Length: 402
Image (cartoon, rainbow, N blue to C red):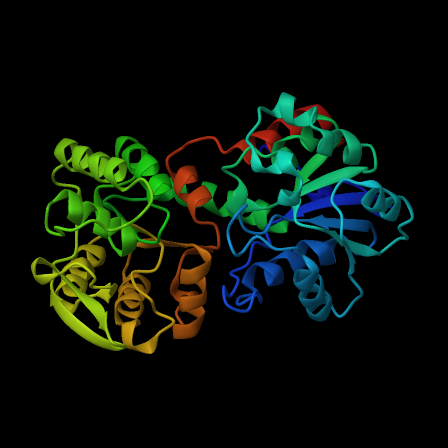
């Protein structure tokens, strides 16, 4: 690997900035954290830094959304999992944060507040410009080492991800090290045909990546589910009413253009399950009416998709096909994951929701590689250089100690 890891540094007594991704799902009605998978994952690297002074930082949510909250709950959950005190600091780059860091004792852990409370963290920068932000200039001088362990955010170029590596030694944490090593191995031996199963709700990001996946020979067949399937079905005029999503017309136009350019690559559902007053009702997509809420794939679609997956050499699935948390609408997600798990292909499952589903259905052991990263992993598979990985590679050249 071209990046440094924790094994390349003497950690005892060092003050370490640990950038993780503890961006958790938040219940919009209560404001409470509803899933702790990413907090659990962060503990692996924290434990590996047991002889150091560890300052943990993460973002949570996006400005203006209901999941845009502080990190107090995260600190309590982290403390409970570690069985060790975690001090929550209600500050990011101000004097309270700086003074608390300066007074830290060895083996102490503190968690700063939501990085996105600092305006700069909501924008993308070149590494050089990121290193000159107030965040990096103020905090950088307080640390001996920066550890980047935020693979789900690796496709972003925010100051915390690409700025510190310009001015202080920077290495990968345990998750990033494992992700990069495993994915390098998989991509070296991946066999055709490459089948991509794409779902989830981040339509714009997915559309950008799809074309690159096809061009780089990483997508021979793309099976669409979830909201992105609805966009393509709208482009096919099989859904005849507006979906009511942000940037819909542009997304539909891009989907239409992609299908025109690559007519044999895309597959969309032929039947779906809608939520009719809390009950599952299956119907042909041509019978959909405005107001119908699509909650899952239908049985004919699942059968068709399963046949394609069964003959694949490599399968990548990202984003759940349906609202599997609701038992009535779990059929699509469970069936697709079972087919992927039982196939002879090299299999990659991406995203926090699907990771939870794999555990729920007891299928995790049958998958070649499981990653909680979503958009970052999709881009990685296209061969795009991810900003955070690039910053680790440049730091390895600049700060290699052994």
